Length: 332
Ligand code: TXA
Ligand code: MG
Image (cartoon, rainbow, N blue to C red; front, side, top):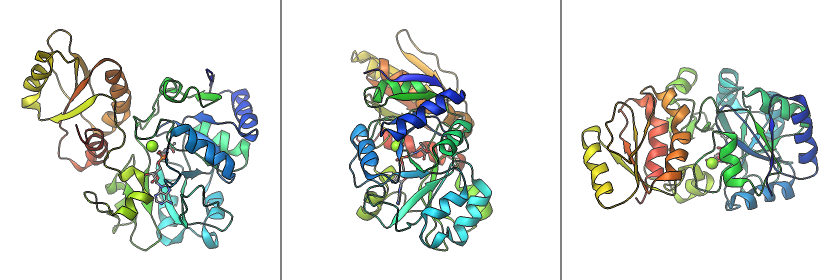
């Protein structure tokens, strides 16, 4: 079955989405980060449908999306986001920040992968906010892609990967950020970044100077279970992805081409490609790069067997996208 694709801006589209959600159907919607696959967060059966559609293990928790910090508080134990949570929420909500707090008793464990914590986010995209307000209850929404595959930053990406599972895709055009929200555990006084994302560590530290990354290289098995964004193999294209220094790009591409493998390159600057090599060039600033990254990978993935990616600058501004590329190349 092909889903309907309706303009996210139109009030009639939002009304249709609300009606479908109340019937227990799945609806994909735009956020400023990536497209989400929405179901009602407090309904265990609806949440189960999301896991089934994505092919995601039920132990991997979902984010509950709400229209304001007040609604977020209602989902946290004691009605509080904690000192660090309040400070971060005030600074960055609505926006690409997800807070992990202790969950209130009425939040079903099906949403949280059995954990006593819950992840909360107030998105900034006007269509996402309109949908949440019109629905009047929180929406569970993982990225609208199959488990471990490339994240969707355009409505067409959702149609292609989950077209058979969703009834409606609200089309809000390309996502502004292009990379997922930053997930921060604020259950203690020292906020810990569980998943790097659109909001940089530097920005977080302007509000919480002690914020730190959770062990980036070797997540514990418990952490992995709690935060699949930490899984070394995540965000992966079907094609093999290899990371290469700029000066070695031409040789790497030649190596693939000579073996008859369709090859593409993802570069930050000019690249003289020989015939038949598909080139995607992204801006050399971190925000522009994040904005275009998944769309470029989707285009390359459609056509080539190997994607040669130019290594990114060491600048911490690139940390989140460097993390996504490292995972996408895992095992290549
Ligand atoms: O930008 C985003 O966050 C997008 C849009 C749609 O809002 N959503 C998204 O959801 O990326 P998903 O399910 O693909 O990723 C959720 C991340 C995972 O890394 C998950 O482990 C973490 O949030 N997470 C969710 N609940 C958690 C919890 N209770 N404790 C620790 N981590 C949690
Ligand atoms: Mg995801």
